[in-house]
Image (cartoon, rainbow, N blue to C red; front, side, top):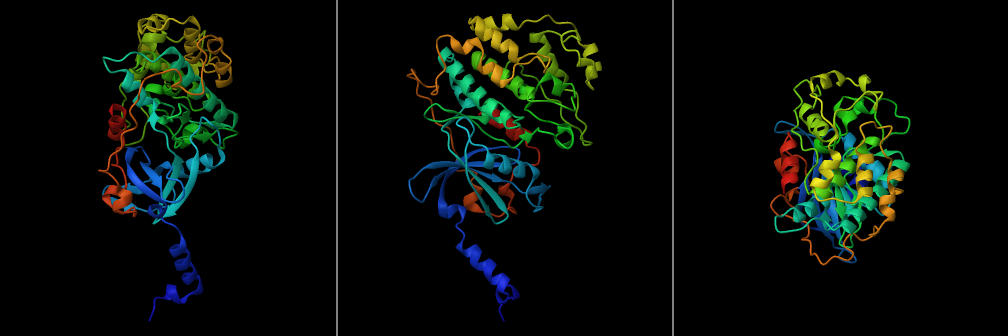
Length: 394
């Protein structure tokens, strides 16, 4: 006798529906594995239907405890990213093409970009290569600010801006990607800290976050933009601290080393310039720091940067007090962008440099091997930090 599910009208409908649904591999040819993040893996793919266009497919991993994989529904991060990406449409934000649900896995299909900003920084940091042309730095920064301004106007905090999350197409268009930590900040029902106690990769984390702020604003994204601007100039992170790990009780430790790196360049923060400073939970820890003068201008010239307007913009982005830090709209109106060379919609304009395309690998393709979340290869190791470090050093 056939199983009950096939005898039930509802069960028969479900089977017919599932059989009629196109699977990921029916629509896309997987070309290789790009990278892994905290919540999933990203692959390069080519469409099998219509024009052979290229896409990036993000596969969310299942929840895992040790070697046992549990299906507990759609993760909070996936829900946020799906909800936000379906609504956002802007030239400088990565476009979501479609979402595919298959075998208890979620696949988000995005437009493909041939480069990311971290890859371009590493290319220029090679000993026999030169710094970015000023026109390129200005164009990258202007497009990035344009995308951030759009997000903030629509009440979205990105909360993980860094070079690895900023894509660049072959046409030189900057695309902000990876909204896995993004949140709406319009009238939140509870402090943002309650849902995510740690946000923003450590080198790009704003001082108010390092000092334990429970409430924060779009200024945390602007600090990250300032760090990225500095990295484009120096070809290395400006504040490269060592991260203290969380203990088993999930207590967020004070990131002393990271805060130290900031004070060594920006000087010691003061209550006079940052009146709300004493209200931060980790304020007491600053009393154990030695006093440092502001050395940002010295740092700016030491990396070969000379444009005075550029320094003023950097200084406005790396402002301790979040209330005084430049907003995205204010930064876009900065006189730095009115002077020659002007920013362009193509960051490669006027260049004769051939950048290598993003590297892909065929070694870790768990879409081909299995779509089910129960295999070892369908997710990341429990501790995603080594994966992040690997991506950082690739």
